[in-house]
Structures are given as structure tokens and as C-alpha cells.
Length: 161
Image (cartoon, rainbow, N blue to C red):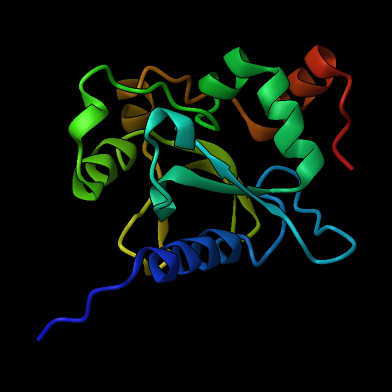
């Protein structure tokens, strides 16, 4: 008989996978909060139906998370936030995973700043996105994380540590 995770166990697994993608450090700044904490940041907001699966999460410090919400257009251009599809109200977790796996995110994964496609399988694997995959999602493969962070600072006044 296959094992089924409870929602709480699935949430915990997703949180651990997302946190460990950059070894517990902020996926934007590579900083670890002084108390070792961080924030799960939904790419598609939970209130808009975004599930807690690894492909829908980016681990950030609380300050970076707040700054990304203050710069929604930039956050969408970097894949930190993702638009909610109009037909998603009845989607399964598998539907969400298939949708989110196609939208790259500009972040640090294992300390490497680049465009990544996030996996929702639970194994914590992210892979570098090819330029064509970034373009197919309507994003700019030439954008770099340092450039995005400089723009985030200009727009919000927040400074990466």
C-alpha cells in the first residue's frame, strides 16, 4: 500500500526541500538569518491557490521577502513571483507542479547565481535553465542576479546584506 503524506507532512517536506536548495541561506543574498531562520516565499501566493510544493517556493530572509513584495513587477520579471493562471481554480498539485516547473527563477541554488527551474518531486533538485526556457516563460535570460538585486534596492530602498 503506497504511503500518503498528510498535508502537514507534505508542507514540512516542501519547506525542507526549499530551505536546503541553498543550504538554508537566502536564495537572493546568500545570507543566513542570525537566528538561522528564513521565510518560505510563495511564487504564486497561497491566497491565489498556490500550493506549498518545492516548485512554488523560494527561501529568503524576512527582509528580502518583504522587499520582493514591494517590487511586484521586478519580482515577476525574476520569477520570484508568478502570475496565477486564470484556469487554476480546480488544479491538482500535479497541475501546479507542471505549470511552475516551466517558469524559471533567478536565484542562488547551491551558491550559484543563475536562472533555475525548480523541481516539485521532493528531492530538492533544481537545474540550470537554458536561455530558450527562460525566454519561453517570457523572462530575460540576460538578467543577472546582481542586476536584479541592484534594481530591487533602487525600487525599494532595501539593501542586500
